Length: 358
Image (tube, rainbow, N blue to C red; front, side):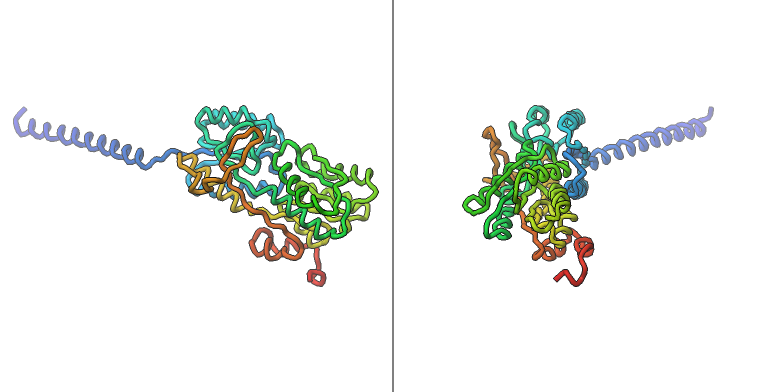
């Protein structure tokens, strides 16, 4: 083979080899670039005791939207008021190595072992709305529940200035918040001429439990002037029972959550008040705190204040962020609920004629 041909072949081999090097380097450089741009996908598990109630669907939607905007993936699970199911959901979240687990507890006293296990695996845990007892979660975020009860008590004092018989239909005893609401209510009416003639706690947050509870009270008592309800869903069934006895609108009924149907009942005159909780703000703050915890950031002092703590029944101080509630009546329905965009005007006043709105 002559020298020009040999040189030409060597030249071609060199070009091919150089091309392979360029391709390899390009692939490696692309790989390096991808590695640098790829951030760890933050994973948040969110287990909610029930999604039957309107209130919790709002929390879920806002929390998920904000967390996703901040780069986190959210897995929402519905426990359907079943403690064992919620325990299993938390176990699954632990197995999936979630960065943070957010819990609306079915039973505030029944999740100690699961929370402790998550914490031992380095997973941060948030008590959402209900403080989990027997352990120390990384954050408790809620609305001030004693204030909720105080607002209900204030309404009773205003609507029944001459005194009267009150029935308290509280939430489940397994929900620590129910106890705080009842505590606030009883504190507010303590030195008044109002009498709590019956106090009961429903077995679960299923709204129909309110129907049975008030019927039992009406069967036992000669006179009922007011019914304090654990939430608006229970209040709805209480008013249904009162309607069957032609007592709706004559008995002062209070609730909480500002559900649409409750707001409708208020402008119609069958429910005296509800308590509005700034749910969107609550869920937004919870999502932001969850992402910060997932990133290993500090939230105490920066986001919720150095001295903001709630103490569990067994003496553990948990970082706490609470929002003040707002009592909603017929008089401030527009300024609180409609002007803030919580419900639409036409939805709230759906069953009320224009002539009777003033």
